[in-house]
Image (cartoon, rainbow, N blue to C red; front, top):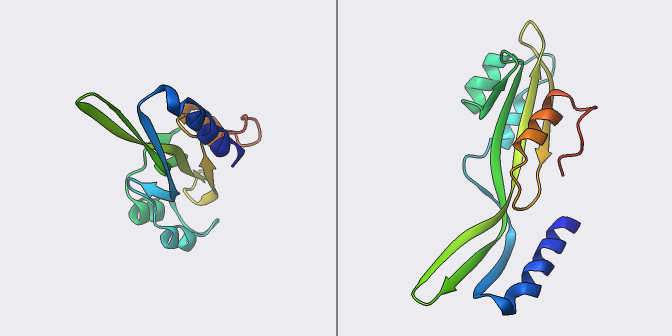
Length: 141
């Protein structure tokens, strides 16, 4: 939360210097978001890799011979409008989120976790590292 506030304060501080307008919004998902009801139906030790794939579809990442599956979506915290003369652009102020599944050798679900990135970051490498080695990787946030 502190990173979000820091980002918006930085944007507001530079507003007089540029023709841009930050518009904060309540956090909302962007893109294909895994169904939270379907996720809660997946049980550790019971559900199999095929259950996850049938329930959530094709993952963004398949790692270490499908031992790890990762789904990605973004959460927008606002939008930034940039304009000048006769042109302009708009883009979301968003942070990546990841849903990670780990499976045993027989294909049963061992672990699932949700990892959150920071605003304007592309922390796929950190998220992959956190998914594969949760106790060794640096914090994704």
